[in-house]
Image 1 (cartoon, rainbow, N blue to C red):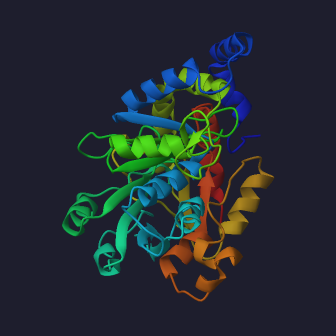
Image 2 (image 1 turned 60 degrees about the horizontal axis):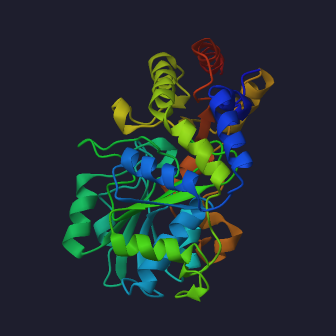
Image 3 (image 1 turned 120 degrees about the vertical axis):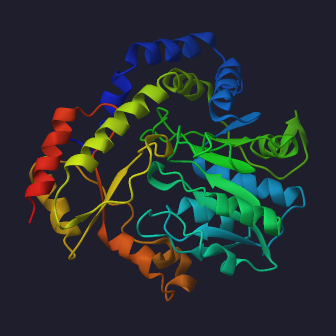
Amino acid sequence: MIPFLSLKDVTALHGDEINDAVTRVVNGGWYLQGNENEKFEKNYSKFIGTKHTIGCANGLDALIWIFRAYIELGVMQSGDEVIVPANTYIATILAITENGLKPVLVEPKLNTLEIDDDLIEDAITPKTKAICIVHLYGRNAYTDKIGALCKKYGLKLIEDNAQAHGCKHTDGRTTGSIGDAAGHSFYPGKNLGALGDGGAVTTNDDELAKAVRTLANYGSSKKYVFKYTGRNSRLDEIQAAVLDVKLKYLVEDNAHRKQVANYYYDHINNPLIGLPDRLPNEQNAYHLFPILVGEDKRDALHDYLEQNGVGTVIHYPVAPHKQECYKEWNNMSLPITEYIADHELSLPIGPSITLYEVAEVVCFVNQFK
């Protein structure tokens, strides 16, 4: 059996240090907003390249607090528009609508699977206040053209960096430090994953950082004094300690992911299989390895691989604009996004899979007809 991702095996890579960290926190008797959070936030800021990291409960909350903070600071207001890729996990869009803002969906490029920067300017209106890019699958979605548009129209640039810990832009900046603020997820399956839920906001904006931290602590920056109607959304000490251990090995673990991905790129040879453009290694953290399966054979390939002991996952079979929760969008036509939803399949990748197992996966993929 070759699992899509074995969290048990991933944890075991650094198991002794993780166990020591958890034991230290348990025996220390301080479980929230203590030294472990302070240390992880400091180290993560250094890794990403920002002044501030604010730990929170999960990646969705991280994005919610960014938009909410901008509203509280008077930068945005209910009804303002945020340009966002149509091809994304729904959390990106939920964070926008949660704050009474209007998502404006822009199609991706089929060869990159990321937002098409040639389509963004036509989507900008007087009500547009931000562009939210998503480094989906671990691929760098930022382009200099997007940066120029933000400058031209005075827009905030927000990054959804939930899947791209350690990815870089061509100029060497790490994703999560490129925009005005970024949301990060530490869901267990991510490149930097906790042993439960966790998330963070990174930014260089002092005022925004203070507002985000306050909002995520019931709206309070001083005990029993509440500036905002916030919520309880904090990263606990155990998760912070675990993340700080795993952060030390993130570059090494990502390097293994890149070995796996390069093997796939070099050896997959099946006319039914399409691969997104191959980026330079530093511009892809390879959270996922998506392929596009032609001739409506995606589900058949999924079943074939499962029958041969290879785990795969579809990311994502129903596009956000086709979800029942956004039924007002169900009649929209976004053909590239819909094509990806109908044809995408993710192959096993991660820090614990062996290259022998990867070669087995490639054999099965190439044999599929």
